[in-house]
Length: 176
Image (spheres, helix red, strand yellow):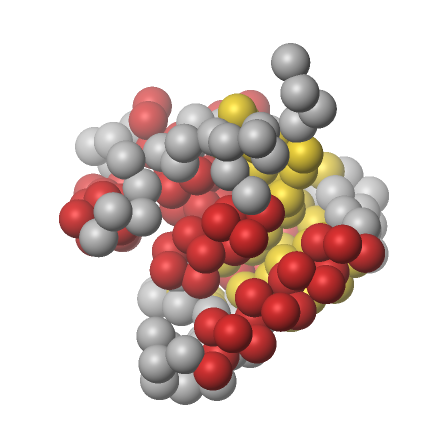
């Protein structure tokens, strides 16, 4: 098997990001977690307090022979609103910020170019505010956050926030 690669992205609630990338060909696994804050191994409650500096993220393991980092980012730009600062819909706070955590210089370069191209396109009418920063202080979320949408499809947040997003991305061919 070829060597897998990782992308770590924050696009609002990690349940949404996880559910989207679980439906992308070439993605091997998606793990919700936290990154970018100033304390080690925060809890969900810590991060939700808004005082740790962490963002909710998904760590995406993918097969680069099936999907490129550029394609991973193309899904990212369409799966959330990268023009809203520290919020996605009714989820408000710095933990819901739009952020690309790069793992190496090549990812940084690709992410910078992808952001520029997306910002110059007419896809989003407002300027993109997504941060592009080195991955720092990542930790995995508690087990009950893993595979959340698939295990809790009837939970109100899943019905009213995640399912419509998945339906829209499926109809446009972004995900399966």
